[in-house]
View (cartoon, rainbow, N blue to C red):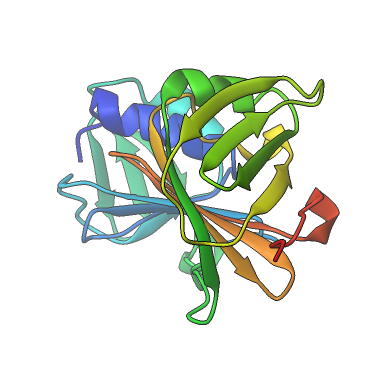
Amino acid sequence: MIITTRIHRVLTQFSRVQNNLVMKKDGLLMTKHVNNEMFLKASFDAGIDADYGISDLKGFLKLCPVGSVISVDKNRVKINNLEINNQKSENLSHPKQELEIPVDAQKIWTMNVNGALMKMMKGDTVRIQAKKNIVSVINLNEEVIAKVDVERTSPDFHIDIKGEMFRCLGAYDYKLNFYEYKGSLVLEALSPDIYAVVAIGREYDVTNLLN
């Protein structure tokens, strides 16, 4: 596998979420599902020649600049000609069950967020509020940082989300899908490179759907 600029950028974002990485032969790169908080995955036509895991992704990236060639022979992982991993198979990282949107979760809103707005939302807690046909993003100072007039048929709602839940995603354009499930919020973020699922429980100040 050749580490392209795009792959390196995605892996850098992954390293901000979790320091373990799983690479699959079908080109799927993913973080491990840890503490039910965030799970990231991305697919590339990258020519990965074996399933394997990296236990120190940040260290891996330091050794692996853009253009590096990764090869795997059983448990031996090489960057160009440098061997970086010679562990027993039971010590390698293996994928766990993915964090998925529950089938009976209720989708309450979908919105597109550009990179500039995502950068502001990453700064602190924001409230996403829908009243009638007005959807707003409001910061802690009760300042409206974004507002759009759209036709809606769903009930009015507002959701408070800590900015730290967005910090790992990068300031890019995303499609955000919000689901309510048993009193908690599940957020699905889609970009051209990354699919992310964030589970936000009551400890993250979620305000449930308001009827």
